[in-house]
Length: 182
Ligand code: CUA
Image (cartoon, rainbow, N blue to C red; front, side, top):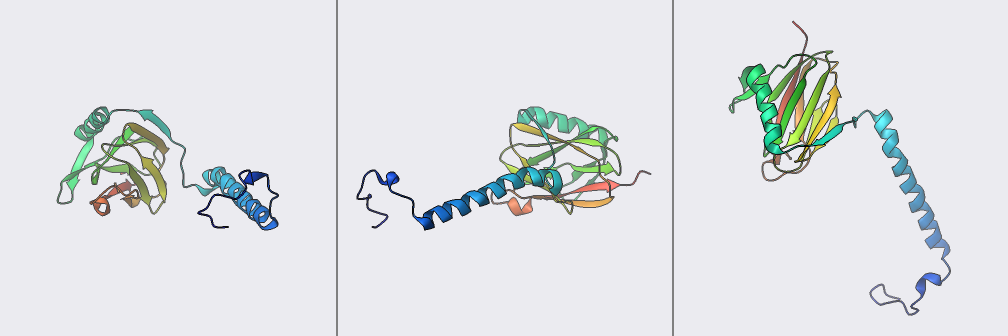
């Protein structure tokens, strides 16, 4: 019987199950269960997917909040695009904007201090990937993601967009600094 033709018996699902078919169903079901339980397991023990809060927000309102922080706490600019480097007070809310095709601004955080990191996209979906910590979050327009972070190692970190977002996707890289308190 060809798969292109309809089965010769209309009530095909009442035919007895072949042993090979049953074996494949059992293997597929078992593997699906493994993958299913890997999700909570990886969340707790993998330490890659952080617990986040998400709120609806318009791009304009989010941009306003980020701009306020940048206006108050910019300490210098970096790169040929003069991206502001922002050093907000420890314990505060910090904002990062994802848009075609840049992260803005550059955050400078203090080691062993806690922050509420807000992330949102202005246009399309982007992927926030912090390396080498390997923290990964989906950044979706219209939503503000908030995670509580406490950096425990000083140094420069790389931010990479890991969600394909168009022709300039490969340019969507940035930095995050963690510095020891002076
Ligand atoms: Cu943003 Cu890829």
